[in-house]
Amino acid sequence: MADQNGRLGGKVAIITGAASGMGWAAVHLFLNEGAYVIGVDLNAENGAQLTESVGAASFGDRFRFLAGDVAEEADIIDAVALAQSSFGRVDVMFNNAGVGGAFGPLTETEVDHWDVTFAINTRGVFLGTKHAAKAMIAQGDGGAIINTASVAGLTGGSGPTAYSAAKAAVVNFTKNAALELAAHRIRVNAICPGIVFTPLMHRGRIAEAEETMKRVQPWPDKGESEHIARAALYLACSDSAFVTGEAHVVDGGYAVSGGLGGQQLIGTREQTRAGIAYGTTGKDPEVRTIEE
Image (cartoon, rainbow, N blue to C red; front, side, top):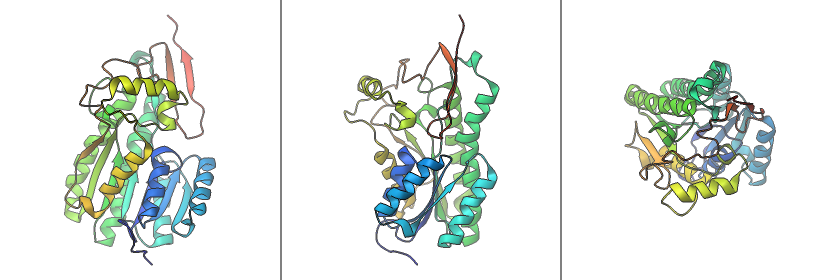
C-alpha cells in the first residue's frame, strides 16, 4: 500500500492539534514526505479547512480527519482505530495538541482552569503515548512518538505557571516513557519550541509578538510552524534512529539567551487579569479582571 517516496514513505502517522499552526504544517510536511496521516483536532471547522487544503494538494487519499478531544481517552482510542482501519497500522504519534490554558497570578488561578490546562497539555500526551505504544508493541517493529513540550517547561519565567508546569511534566514524562518503551524499539522524544508564530502564541497581536521576539531571541528570523514540523519530521524518520528520551529545543537561541528575563510575552505574566485561554479549539476564552 505504501508510497515509498520521501523520508516517511509508507509510514502511518497520527498528528493531534492538526488543524492549525504547527500541527497543520506537520500534516502537510508528513504527507509531502510520503506518510499516511490521521489528523485530530477539537475544532471541526478548522478540520474541514485542513481536509480541503490536503485535498487541493492531491493528498486526500492518504489523509483522514477526526474531530476529537485529546483529553478524552475514547477519542484517542478512536484515532488509533481509524489509523488501523484506514491504513493498517500506526508508526508515528505526534502528540502536538495544546492550549495556553490558565493565566494570571497563581493566587487567582481557578482549580478548574488548572485542571483543563493539564488535561489537554499533559493528559493528552499520556493518552496518545499509551494507545500508540499499545498499537506499536502489537505490530512488533517499533515506532516513534513525539510530544510537543515547550522551553517554558525547562525554566521559570517563560510562560504562565500552569502552562509551564504542564509542559515540564511533558518533558519528564517523555524521558520516562523512552526508558520503558526502548525495549520495544519505540523512540519517544519531545520538541521544546520557543517563540513560534502560531495563532496560539500571538493571539492576533502579531506586531507586539514580533517586537518581543526582537528583544529576547538572538536569531533574527522569527519562529514559524514549519520549523517545528521539520523537527518533528527528523524525530519521526530513520534519521533519528539512535535518538530517544530527548527534549529537542527549537527556539532560535531563546533559551540560552535567558528567555524573557521577566518581560511579558502576550499575557505570559499577566497580573491584572486571570482566566483561561483555549487557543484554537474554537472555544472562547474566560477572562476576569482582578480587583485591587
